[in-house]
Image 1 (cartoon, rainbow, N blue to C red):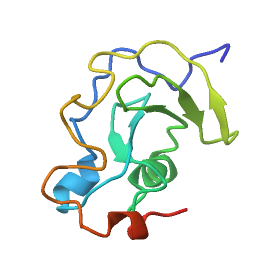
Image 2 (image 1 turned 30 degrees about the vertical axis):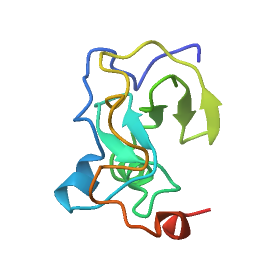
Image 3 (image 1 turned 90 degrees about the vertical axis):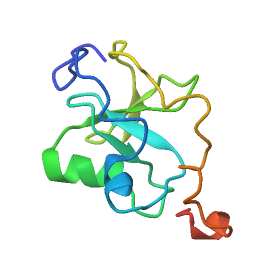
Length: 116
């Protein structure tokens, strides 16, 4: 990605899990972090798809994976993978947080509830 308009490398993540799921006692499959404001939302496979909802509400086009060991970006405007700078730490949810998560709120039939 040649330019970084829409990316703030100083904005920390909103928390260790999906901010919207946490507010509503929901659960998530994987997490994505807004590269502009740090909002952490759940991926499109998750029941609530909060990362995409954040893009639609704010126009913040770049999300980065918030999973341990992953640093890829997604550009919602081009609908393609992108590259970008390293964001402020932490760059993933805690290693001891389960996937899916959070612990104690994931239903037993979670696999059947994923969006494909």
